[in-house]
Image: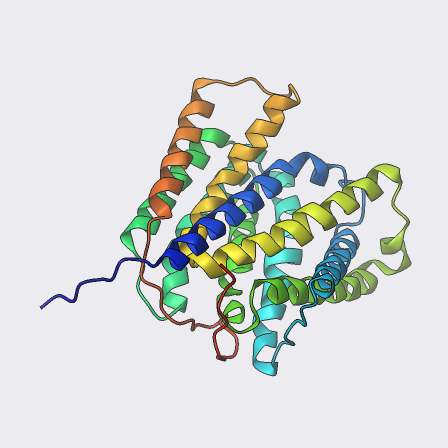
Length: 319
């Protein structure tokens, strides 16, 4: 006999709406920041990321202090997940993305990155000890298709495709490796400590590989880009994204990644760098359908998996 599923409570519905709004805001910010990231092309990559993440972590820590909130410290068992998240999902993603664009056209790289919602929709529930749900998976498929239509693909040579795939896997690890840590630390602490780990780790790597030359002072243009990336794309967007993952689950939140190229398109249109065509309209419609379908309610289970970190008492995400 099938046990009826209780309807979601009012508190759950409010939390879901807030999580969707936070995830959507994070996706819009990250997607619209592409022109800003391009302003750092001539700056040392690893050192620039280390500065960005360290400043972002300080801003998040300051925000927590202003709220009078003491952030829980990571346990020893949380460190592997945080280090993997920082090394791959933050520093590694930017490095592979830059390298991929040297061998492949931006459209192809963006199309490969568009597969990440599907990977998260399949892997997220498995890491949480459950099974993938139909609605997020179908939504992720539509999001992947929408991104492919929007970007149009492109040519590649040499290791371009491999580097794009590695960048995509790094992008998924930013969400997947936070699944278990979020359950114990909460979204604000997860974003804060991952930024500090990436900042310290990036600084060490930059110093070892580049020496003193990796730490040249940024010019005015580069400094402005670093500040925008640290404040909006790191502190604001990271905190909002992890709130969304905690409220919605990794699989449903992952569908929102499809909004990033739509946001990039909107910025390009506003700047007059691109004109709207039929493929843009069709791709945007597919992404909108994907988000609507992918955010449907699912059953939530406990967090476990190779990136899940130490199991601890679950924290209720603020609704």
